[in-house]
Image (cartoon, rainbow, N blue to C red; front, side, top):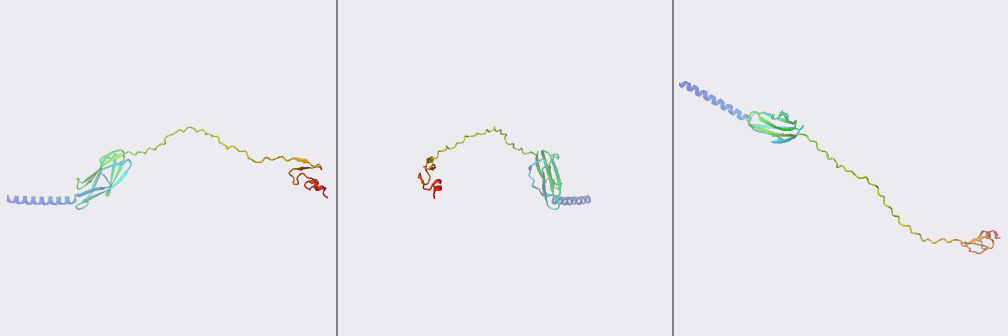
Length: 191
């Protein structure tokens, strides 16, 4: 019986050593933290939008991997590419994108995504206005009255007959006298 007790205690010791070693290894590989850069807990996307987020997992020792999943693949499609995830909005609706660490399922990041349909901004039409035709209005122009000029009236010249039968004007140089050379007859009769 003592022999069996010795064997049982050795087996129990081995089991304790193996489980403690396994526990130490798994705790070293468990993730300390998980971050998804650029992502928020609640996000709104439009149909056709594509967003890329960088996933960073910190562990005590060794490399850790992660998984990504969409709760509604018809609304949001998720693709893993290296240390990044690409989220594509397919149609209007809601979906949850969950990023989990493989070695520690408790470490996860959930993004609640609401997808809205693309809306075209309505173009604002200018209000239609009807303008009545405008008839041209002609205002009478006022012309200043013309004031009469005050020029001296022109007096008619009187012609008086001369003794020789020639006419001489009153305005002529010599006046109404004869033979002083101021008319043509005086010039002809001169010696």
